[in-house]
Amino acid sequence: MPDDHHHHDHDHSELSDTQLRVRALETVLTEKGYVDPAALDLLIETYETKVGPRNGARVVAKAWADPAYRARLIKEATAAIAELGYAGRQGEHIVALENTPKTHNMVVCTLCSCYPWPVLGLPPVWYKSAPYRSRAVSDPRGVLKDFGVSLPAETEIRVWDSTSEIRYLVVPMRPAGTEGWSEEKLAELVTRDSMIGTGLARQP
Amino acid sequence: MNGAQDIGGMHGFGPVEPEPNEPVFHADWEKRAFALSLAMTMPGQWNIDMSRFARENRNPAEYLSMSYYQIWLAALVSMLEERTLVAEDEIAAGHSLHATKAVPRILSAADVEQVLYRGGPTERKTSTRAAFKAGDRIRARNVNPATHTRLPRYVRGHVGTIERVIGCHVFPDSNALGAGENPQWLYTVRFDARELWGEAADPSVKVSVDAWEPYLEAI
Image (cartoon, rainbow over all chains, first blue to last red; front, side, top):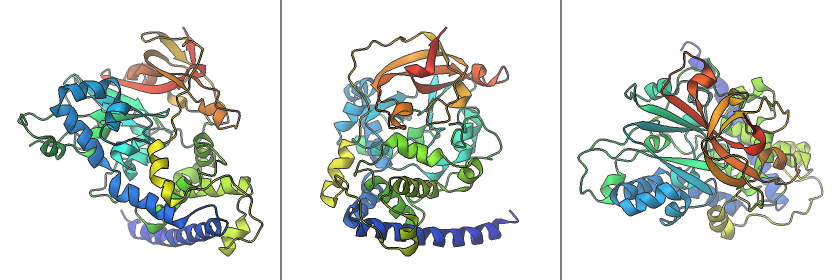
């Protein structure tokens, strides 16, 4: 794009203003005793290193490998996910959506950025962006194309707009040729996008 | 409110652009703005629905021109200033200049893990009965509150089917106003894409929203 360079310059000056403002705000809040900077560091560390899509991949892999767990996950996902130690903020009420050859599930939050943090971590920028939020509900096949995914015309595309505190986790279809694989090995095939519904599980 | 946050079905934003190997945060200030926003929920001066309203309640042109964490930051500052916890001159000076208002509690590092693990469940006990059951046909009400609501414009006035009775949950429209939790029955309501977008829409597409009972009317 011709104005790319200008756009980046503009971003840079904006960012430094914002950077200064955030730093000033943090100082004010700390001086007033409203925040503990060590708690802030820990919050950041938690979502940068501990809570992310590897959690969800473990859940999906276990559901693929263990039919009893799969049944619990479909029936009461919040409790089944807590069995693996994942729970809490932005995942207080989770529903698992199973993809089948007949139905492909895809999750969006058109109004903001609702996303199942305990299993997927914080949402990527595209999930929070206007292009995704505007089109996921009106042109989901077009959005899937943006991700390089094309599904048969007869597959039902089921879009879930996360307008309440219910958080949705897509369970992608298990790839063929993975019979007898361990949960650890299966988890490697489960991508973040496959658990949002904008992708499919990796082929072995 | 019919603000720029309610963009389901809009055109012109271009393709979705996934970023390969995307980092969790794109700048140091994003990390701090995120953590400050989370930590400042602990003093209990606002709830999640008030936060959402503070984010969406701005000029649409401004909303659409801001990055995600810029919106979070602006909302945090506006909520702090409205409650006179922080004043603009303090942010400009980078120091506390005025008397500090007492708050009941703050988030300490020792409590982070437990607070995150506990979260904030919104399901509430009720003695009322759900008005609808799975399979019922309903219409999403044509309502246009200027205050916070979670009924997107693209379903208002349209006919859908109750797919699931979820339970009784805190009603954001009341909670955002400080008018109490006012728990209401919550449903997953499914719509055919052709009902929402017209006959030219893809017949294989179904879209659901989660809708509280006051958003729905029997047909």
